[in-house]
Image (cartoon, rainbow, N blue to C red):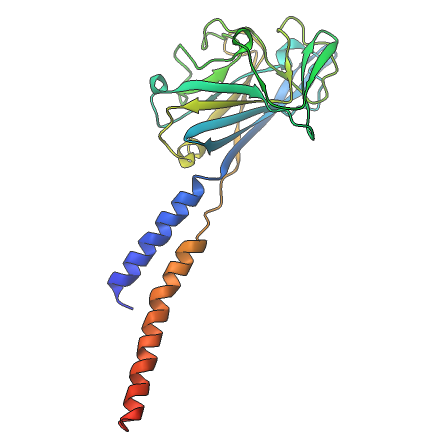
Length: 255
């Protein structure tokens, strides 16, 4: 096989690998120390970034084992970096991702509403993209409270899976476990997200009462299945051509 063919097939393999990367997910997680009524307590979160129908989809989860016994432990925002200018992005969907198998809840005091299907957030409960300058290394984010970054939001955050209806204080009617957001106008790929930084913000103090850096946990695995098949085809054709040539020489008595 000539170098020209090899280069062409290698390029195809790389192209297919990049295309497959765009269909996976990038996951960041982080943990730190917050505050409870009994003293310091654990706070933790995760964010899953994926591409869905041309939009950037972000699922933000409060993963703490602490029952969010203090308002400062409520997950209220995420900061990250994209290749696109923030002005070109828009939040087109945000919802509580409930299913029959994994219902989701929204709390109001000590009572909760159970959702077994996706619950679209009404306008008075919606989070927003930033309208102010963010810390160095970040150019966008999603927030459920102002924090000096997101304007006048409703102050509704995400409490932990173990939350049982008390302790979140005055921070609205919190959602439990996670929220999912769809951002339109994103033209980059997931490698842009994985190459950047992520920070989780807890509590409604300016800039967040607590800031927890995210650690890159998972990136999509490149899948070269079709590209590998394409690589084999030229090699197989060359072997078959060589075999036929030798057979012809044998029939002519030349070998």
